[in-house]
Length: 344
Ligand code: MRU
Image 1 (tube, rainbow, N blue to C red):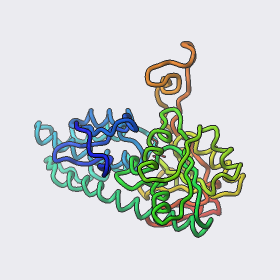
Image 2 (image 1 turned 90 degrees about the horizontal axis):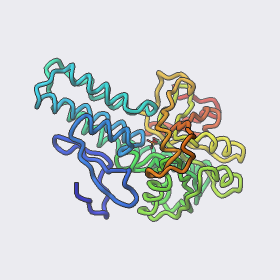
Image 3 (image 1 turned 90 degrees about the vertical axis):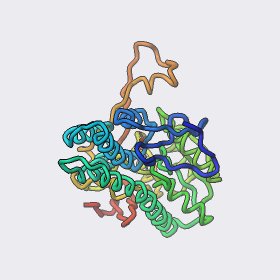
Image 4 (image 1 turned 60 degrees about the vertical axis):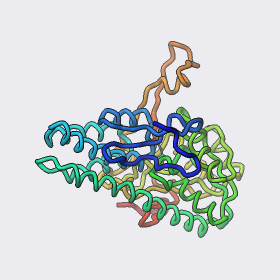
């Protein structure tokens, strides 16, 4: 599909009449390219390869994927059981972000015995629009909490990409950054590069650059030193699943930042929509951590840098215990797990 104009960013993922359109995040920052997802296999492939990634964007894509299955069922003469089976396939594309199951289930709930795609499409499109409003609300709430707790202007450390690319337009952690920046309350962002797929160096840096935010990228191993040297005032990250006790799953490398923040006495803030809070998961120990292809660690863009006999444990997420989370900011509330408040 054509490269869109770069002055105004298209939505990360959207509905286009009878299929999905998404920014191909594997090609950023070098190319801003939209891809069309016209089959359920296309949707699953986009989720697995991180063409679309980030918990809220994954959730919206799940909902749109079910709507697409219903449209295809009506066109090709499949029944409701077929749609349910396709929805189950989409739901299991990635295990850690609860938003995926949330998005799939929300749209699937409108499936009737005789497949009528219209209400499913309408619900999925509603999810796209809601995501923008939800994340703007939580971003402004998070910015206000930080101003109240730390003051301004602020220097922020973030990990992975929790920006507009991880949602539909407004980000979560980078939404907080955007709100601070627009208010003139931001000095600098330090972005972890985020091994092995470089969501920080490729995507967060790209978004910060577009926003005109002063920023630097550091290797993941430098995060604790950035904190210990007093180079940032707070750590702000997104989340893939928040357990009922306040434990937080997010991109691998988040937990060490929380430890370092606690040691240095600076806030560790998690910005996430309510759809990321999973009250049916009691603690972080119950969260399935996605394990990906070892080649993502052992090679870069197809070029192997580890010895041929070496293998890897490519765990994509970690769990930060609730006692290290200064604030969990959603579109509805701020809770402070470190002082005993719980989401559930
Ligand atoms: O593997 P990814 O790139 O989907 O991981 C994304 C993250 O870990 C984000 O921090 C999280 O989903 C929050 S996005 C607002």
